[in-house]
Amino acid sequence: MFLDSSRYNKQKVVEGVTKDGRTVKVVTLRRPPAVSGKPTVVMGNDRLDIMAQRQYNNPTMFWHIADANTELQANDLVKETGRIIKVPEQ
Image 1 (cartoon, one colour):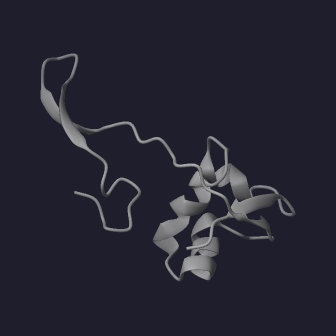
Image 2 (cartoon, one colour; image 1 turned 45 degrees about the vertical axis):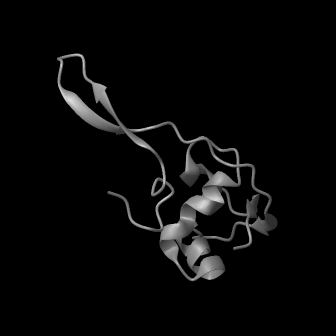
């Protein structure tokens, strides 16, 4: 259902019922693990996928960076040049 590199790859899938009575498959709530990371300065034009490519040689692993930080909207992490965020080691 999900790519091997997806944060949801090993997440449990269950059946749920919508308001109109349809049965659908849903992914259970995923709690981000506590992750430490190396303080990294956001450079101009940085994006999480670019940072993941630099760190992990895989842009689809951007969610590792998102999980290591507390921002609710992942893209907000790179909005401000000069901001320091955590980038976990592989």
